[in-house]
Every structure is written in C-alpha cells, then in structure tokens.
Length: 236
Image (cartoon, rainbow, N blue to C red; front, side, top):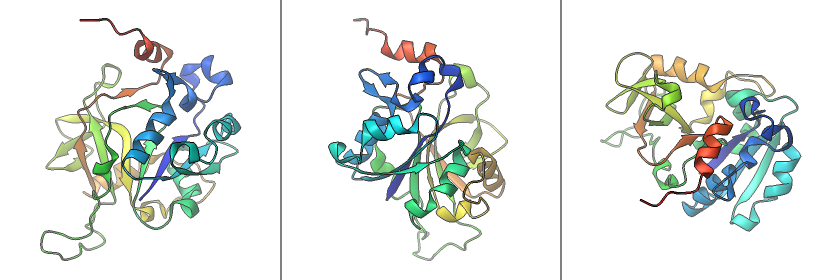
C-alpha cells in the first residue's frame, strides 16, 4: 500500500508562521507535523509515500529529501497553485498506482495512530468470498474522531461502519482515509476539487465506510492549538 500526505495548503490561519514555513513543517514536541506521519507510516510497513506541495514546497523537499533517512521512499507532486485535496490526489494518480491508498492531512497531530489498521479496510470480498458489485463496494474508508470544540457539528453520521451525510450521532473526519483510485476518475489532473465534495456524493450512495479513532488527535489549524500542544507538560 502507498500513502499520500497533503502538504500544499497555504495555512492562512497560521500566519505569520506560515509566511516562512510550510504548515506541515511546523514542529510539535520537537518534530515537524509531517514527520510524525512519515515515522508512523514506516513503522507500519508503508514506505512508499507521495507528498503534494505548493506553498514553499521546495522547503518540504529540502527537509525530507528522498525519505531514506526515515526508511521511506518519497515522491513529490508539485502544484503551481494548490489544487485542494481531491485535485491533489487526481494530479498525483500516476504516482499512487491502481490499488487503494491511504491519504493523510499534513496538518493534523495524531502521534499514536497505528497505520496497520488501514491496510485491509477496503477488502473486495464479502464473508462468503464473493466479490461485491462495483456499485456496492465502499470506495473509501474514513477514520472519524469525536467532535472537537471548534467543530461541534461534526461531518458525518456513522451507523454500523457506514457513513451518511445526515443523522446522529455525528463525528468529525480526522483527515485520514483510505481511497480507491477510481473514486477520482471524474477529477482531471490540474483541476481544483475538494475531497469533501466527492465524499458527500458517495456517502449519499452508501459507499463510504468508516470507524471512530479514539486516540490523541488535534487539527493544528491555529497558532493557539499549536502553542497548546507545545506547552510544557504539567506534572499531575
């Protein structure tokens, strides 16, 4: 399995830090956000990694190199203008191959996520060993989290490992998901497109599966949240 890490965003809410540093290179507890993902992927045996970039992208390449110092092989998908998440995947499909892959937001912090669990989430066969019809297979599997204080409305409802756009209880998309490449057939390389648009379309068809991740997770979307993560730990 291959992995893609989204690293093309401008990080407007993190300015002025992101005026000189790409958001995925901001450090949490002494390590760049994106490196936490790389280390955890390699630990799970997922060593072929694709990273898209736009804003200050050369800094990302200069910092991570070819990935060998982490035990990984990193390929880059540069974007002149950030293509959003689905657009970034479509633009990098020639690097991702034809098998399901895991994609991770470069600006989340989840230091204990075990990527072993992503490897078999999109099995093609049911319990009797028969392949699912193409129009019934899950095209994606999302890991959801408890709604954080800044996003109490959540993103999706989850029932019996199936996601829907409406209903309760609702959870927030963590930024970690497994996808079939064909899910992005409608997006052309170079086209700007948000992933949530496709996810809602397929969720309405009942073709998005998911589960809740209950470990440590933070959307590092503001300087305040970054500072909270880097604050000295107070002994109990």
